[in-house]
Image 1 (spheres, rainbow, N blue to C red):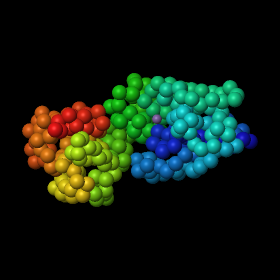
Image 2: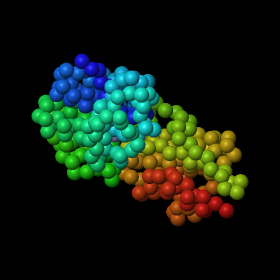
Image 3: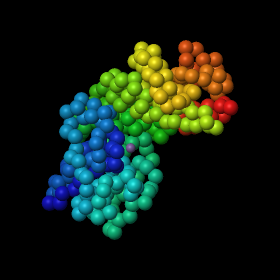
Image 4: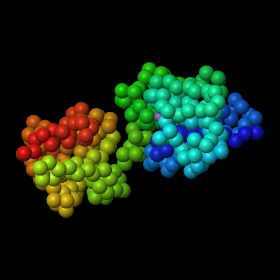
Amino acid sequence: MAKVYVIGHKSPDTDSIVSAIAYANFKGKIDVDDEYIPARAGEINSETKYVLERFNVPVPELLTNAEGKNLILVDHNEMGQVVDGADKARIFEIIDHHKIGDIQTSAPILFHAEPVGSTGTIVADFYFYHKIPLSKEMASILLAAILSDTVIFKSPTTTEKDKQIAEKLNEIAGLDIEKFGMEVKSAKSDIKGKTANELIMSDFKEFEKDGYKYGVCQVEVVRYDEAEARKDEILKELEAVGASKGERLAVFMLTNIIDESTKLWFVGDEEVIRKAFKKEPVNNEVFLPGVMSRKLQVVPPIHEAIG
Ligand SMILES: [Mn+2]
């Protein structure tokens, strides 16, 4: 009886963790001679924690070094993302939805890659294809993985197959898909319990043009109201942070991943904001529909508008 670890990429997301759990469970059902153990290559994030706790599914065991072990890789096929020691492990299978990377094996393996929105979609499809019954818990976490990776079907990576498989899973899970997706995504973008300083500093980047210093932080949310209720507090802290760094402009991007828009809050140089976004700021804010990327859509116009 061989022991085989099913494992996703480092800095695991919900898809990596859930695929490992669900595929290990699937393999255990079609091959009773070997033992399939779900594993993880790092700490789980708050979204994954929420999903596993909600359905009472145990967190997979942490594998820090895979040397000498038998592995099945899910949700990745790049050496840069694989668990440490994988170069000295035996890789039996790869199940993934990314571009083909650089992993090499010394023996033939099962390599299943499909251009769909999540590995969860592929794993769920295996259950349906082989008519292996899915428990309510397993169907629910697989649905969570699909909704997470496809940003509730809003990501351009979403395919028809993701939607169809999600529907089939939900015949077992019995959830309100849209509402469940929001609950999953909000678990990661939860701003409750974080101070204004923590929100600002969690992803703050500093820039400079000809001695003009400015800073831009970004916080992703699934709804605006919670952060908006704290706008005064956040602006006050933003002003303090900007001042401590000698910045003439400090920007807080409140990005709504559902709505695909950004409320840009700022303290300091209003003229630069006006010029950069060709909008009249109201209460230290401009609303930017379609804007989600700091490096592509916010920093270049500000940089251009300075000086
Ligand atoms: Mn994935």
